[in-house]
Image 1 (cartoon, rainbow, N blue to C red):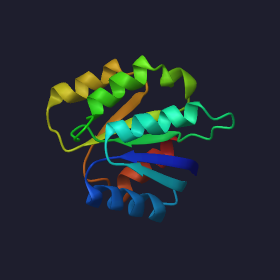
Image 2 (image 1 turned 30 degrees about the vertical axis):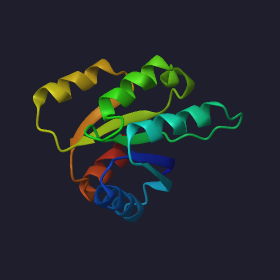
Image 3 (image 1 turned 45 degrees about the vertical axis):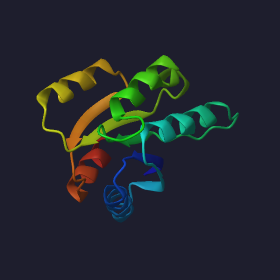
Image 4 (image 1 turned 135 degrees about the horizontal axis):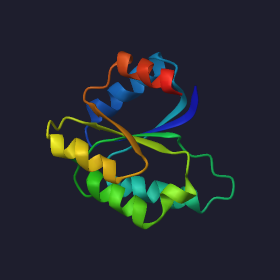
Length: 132
């Protein structure tokens, strides 16, 4: 079981579903959420300034969001070198996009380990648990 999972998505129903599925699968002790990439960047910025940072080891990230989308978030995350500050944080893009170029583009981000299609399911979580 992970200590923390961070879900970043602008859709309230998707966030609620993520929380419910993760809770029911007993995959994390705490599920944190953000509604866009800008909130998520601020979250990691604040974490990086803490001396006793306990950070999420898994981030579920949507691509299509207002204010700052998933791609912009990933670019900023790399620019700020948070992948070095939080080396064990792994990202899974959780998106409704069906564009194969999006799947290919995720390979440019070393912290992204998978690309899954929405909606998240118990079976997906069980698969992730097997990889932990």
